[in-house]
Length: 196
Image 1: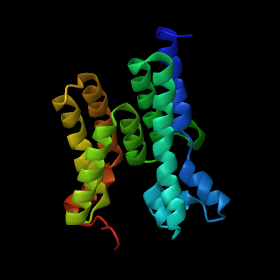
Image 2 (image 1 turned 120 degrees about the horizontal axis):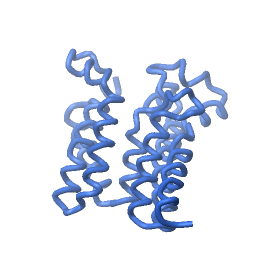
Image 3 (image 1 turned 30 degrees about the vertical axis):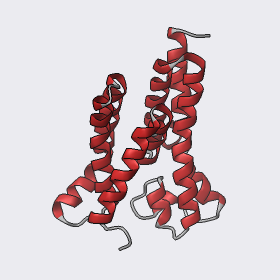
């Protein structure tokens, strides 16, 4: 199966892989309390870190990244760049709005990096460099992700990847939406800093 029908399948494969809640699964296997009752209630690596388990947080980060990367690679290998981009969109939406958790998922940063890694890895390195630089100077994890995501579509467009730039413009808008409470706290000066 290839062509237009596989594009739909690619989107669904991406969504199903993206909707795997690694943070929730790993913390349950470790016997900790329900992750959704800790800190922000989010299922991502940052909230897993609040349980005091750095290893679980790192494993969640890697899992949430790789589910995006794997979705892109599977779809791209089978049916090319268009399928890969749809799988990326599906994986990102799956992470944000997993059907298994009543559409209440994570904020998408790790999966954003994962699909970026699968589609155009130099941009993932740029994202990571900007995140690290912003985190070092500001000590805000959320701000670092927002700045890096804002730059990503510009970087992709600058290097001649118009289709990817368009895709990541959409993903960036979704990521900003998922961080709307963080943005309010940043504006109010009440956002928690890294290591605080």
